[in-house]
Image (cartoon, rainbow, N blue to C red; front, side, top):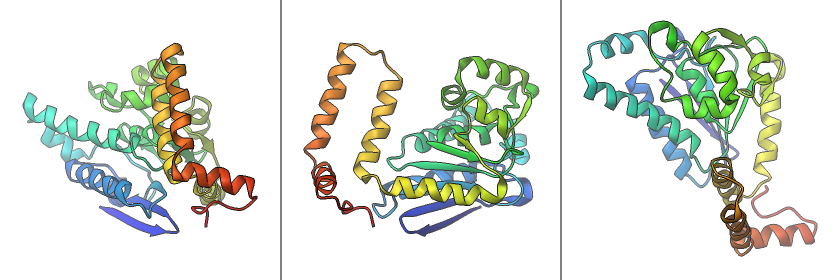
Length: 257
């Protein structure tokens, strides 16, 4: 169901249901949420890469799971939807940087996984589709992350039309951070990881929180005051002091192995 590898401060979590294109059901959602929360609590893990085994990244919902959902009442549907919403929130709010490795198709909820990660690197031939409208549903639980990634205007098009688009278009509209030929995909992700590992672990967590705060508000006096408070606080931390000292002494900081 899931493969987990840890090496050099990087955890690689791979969806491992290639026979059904890594489609998820309630069991996979629970397992992935649990794994990501444990990785977030592991101080030895500095960054997380989310990938898929086989030809697809993630095809969205498992058909057997959807058949079961068809018989659910409102309360069961709400509980089921909340679990997926919690998974997306878990990815989005991890203290560690996250990278989606999109080597193949990402449909429906799979697009949500891509959008919830901090960075998404994919191949030009990857296919994306927000297909919910075609079966009379809505991409509700993934919408906060997808709309944030591609913007309202493009979300209106692709949520409503359920068109299939490729990695070039996904990059153009902001869903992918970077597009890479398949033979260079892992090398370019490794280069991003090298840069991430040079940053302070506590700094990364605070930067992610800063981005969420600034992106969701208005640039007013309260926000400006808050940003000043944040930099003052981080300068006083052991990590902040070590970072400045290492810069002035022209050496690598203690966290950069």
